[in-house]
Every structure is written in C-alpha cells, then in structure tokens.
Length: 520
Image (cartoon, rainbow, N blue to C red; front, top):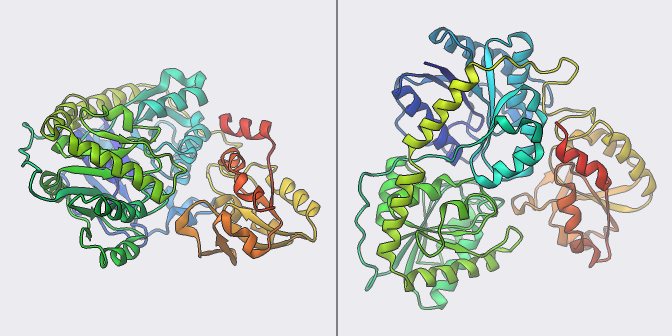
C-alpha cells in the first residue's frame, strides 16, 4: 500500500479542490493506503468547510504558518514542516511518499526543495485543477521534478500535451469523482410552483461571476417566471449579494453547509446554475449531476461540454469569459426557459445516470490508485541545484512569474516614457516583484489597472487599482502590460485602451511571450 500527502494551501475552505482532497483522502484510506492532508489557514472572509473526515486520515496542521502568498521566495519555514509530514507518513510504506502540492506555485517549490536533499523520500505529482494560465505555468515550471501530470478535463489534457510534448507519456486525464446515490433521487413536478434554482460555491466575481445572478433573477422576474434562486456559500462578494437580496424576494444567500447539507439542497432544487468565466471540471456541477439537479452552466472552455450533453442531462448557456454580468445573465435566462420547455424529469434521470457511469468517487479512486502505483516505482527526480526552488521572488531577480530580464526591460521602457502619465496593467506578483524598479521610475505612475472586478477600488504598492475603462479619468496617456503569464491575452484586449486614446505598451515582444508559455 502507498502513502500520499495532499496539500491544501487554502485550508478547508469551501471549494472544489478542498472537496476533492478530502474525498480522495477518505477513499484511499478506506482501501488501506496511508494518506495525510497538509492543511493551511483558510483565506480571509472564507469559512471552514463543515465535513466528516475519516479518522484514519492524518492531518498536518500548517495554520500557524503565514500564507504561502507571503513567501516572496523564502520557503524555509514551510519546507521543514512538509519534510516532517513526509517522514511521518514514510514509515507506513517501504516506498516513497507521493506528494500532491496543489494550487500555489510555492507549494510546488517546497516539494522541489525537499527533492534536492532527500530525492528517495518523495515523488511529486502535478494536478492542474483549473483552465488558467497560472496553473499550466506552474506545472511547466516544475516539470523537471514532477513524476506525473494530472489533467482534470480533456481540455486541460490538450494544453499540457502541447506545453509538455516530451513528457506526453507522463500526462493523464483523471476527472474528479463524487458520491452518487444508488438510485436517482425523486423529483417533484415543477408545474404550479416556483422554479427552484441553486448555486453552491464561493461568492466571488473573478471566476464565479456571481453578480450575474442578480441580473438573472431580475430577468426571470421580468419574463414572468416564478422562481427562487438560492446561493449557498460565502466569499468576498457576500455583502454585495446580501444587499441585493434585500430588494429581491426571489434571491437569497445561505451560509455554506456540509457536503451532506449540499446534497440535501440539491435534492430540493430543480436546477443548478453556474455563471463561471472558467473552470477545470466543476465539482459542484458534478455533485448536481449526481443528485439529478439539472446543471445549467456557462459553456466554459474546460469541463462543461465534457460533462454536459446539451439538452439531455443539462444545458449550456452560451456566455464567453469576457461577457459582462448582464450578458451572462441573459444567456442563463434563455437556458432556464429552454429547461422549462424540456422534459425536466428525463433530464434529471440522465444527469444521475451520467454521474454514475463517468464521475463516481469509486471510478476516480481506481484511476488515482493506478497512478500512485506507477509513481512509487518510478526513479527519483531532483530539482536542479542551479535553479531557485521558489516560484515567487522579491526584488525582480526572476521567478516563475517574472523572467530574469524583466527588470531591465521595465527600466528601459519606463525611461522611454519619461514625463508621461502612466498606469500598469496588472496588480499581481509581476508588479509586486518589480516594485523596486517602479519606485525609481522617471515616468509618472498614477494607477494600476486589473481585469478582476474584485480588485477595483483597492490599492497595491500605494497606487489605486482601476478598471481598464477608467484610465482616461485618471488622465493616463500610456499603459504598460505588467504580466508575463497573461501578456498576450491583455494585448489582445488593447482596444479598451486605444479607443480612449491611451497607448498600450508591451513589456515582452511576441517571441518572448511564446517562449514563456512553453519554457520547461
């Protein structure tokens, strides 16, 4: 039997990755494997998930340590604790411990550092949970030390095979698994009562686009569709949603509950609504399928079309990642009307049937067991000693988010804009790690811009964070792209600046951006 350590860098927060880790740990333990969870503190404004964990799962409490986001390239406090956890699990097996870092680049950096001193102790596996550039970049960056790469969807598998072609044999698609009841839950007819719609998950805008639900309930009301839309969860947008609920009787938010409570809520609702901009393979969507609560979800690039057969076991709303909240709500409202015209009982039965055949926790655990068996018999891999282990850095010296040449490129570009009033597009690691260059800029930096609505109105490095459309009000003449990972995506949306007479500047030219996307 094998031993495995699963890291949860966001603690037991209410998220699909947390549910995956907890479920997998319990399922593997029930089959005789030794499994530990390395649990960090939950992010601010997020409650701890209420769940029952198999008492045989080992918990390694990291909540007294600072958030990994504050590491700035210095991983020593975390390395010692993770090394202790691996040693605690190792005696249960004569084989190496399989370590799944998850979510945060520096969590992978911790594993990389341990392989430099004890390569025989551990085998690292990289799980890509979301269809975002950050996740793909982390796995590409740490490819030399990863024994296997797991894609949770077909789309993510294609991305990894493109990025990591020489490692194609080590890439595997393993969709998530959820508990599926032995029979389809009974459903009451919708006729003669309000339609019951449910969203479960984080209450936030950047990924989940929850503001669209406010528009959705307004549109359904305008169309004369009697309904009740329940949002079950918490997050940074909770107060905004609660305020909207006070003037909308059909909309309500309830605090997060246990997985059993979620299953009960799914059994009591007719359809599950998801407005996401991106996903990997939504665990909440799979839970809805299993409960026969018909998913009505945005047609995100990864996961949605893989799980949903449009019109058979669910409905796909044609909203793009760039659509605003109102446009997304319109697509969802149209899909809700399609649902009401369909045979909802047949769709519910088909949803349960597909979950049984394709997304059960038993099927998922079978696949993971086979992966673990291959990993523990693979040769050890060590992180190259000449490369920093950390994904983050400070001072612009180069990291997983910032190339080595970035500081000089930014210094030169700022010099060419001397006397201009400028903003930087990007309020993330790239900007923070280059703060020392920005502090001595000859240009007049007045703001940062960011695509994440949740950041608007905040500050970073003392500068206000604006929406890109607001730069003209700050009298900005020029904007610099301050991102390596998302450079080309930001450049492709430059019209938001140019139509306002603001010039957008590349920090990296196209060949550099292409190289960045494929660098191992």
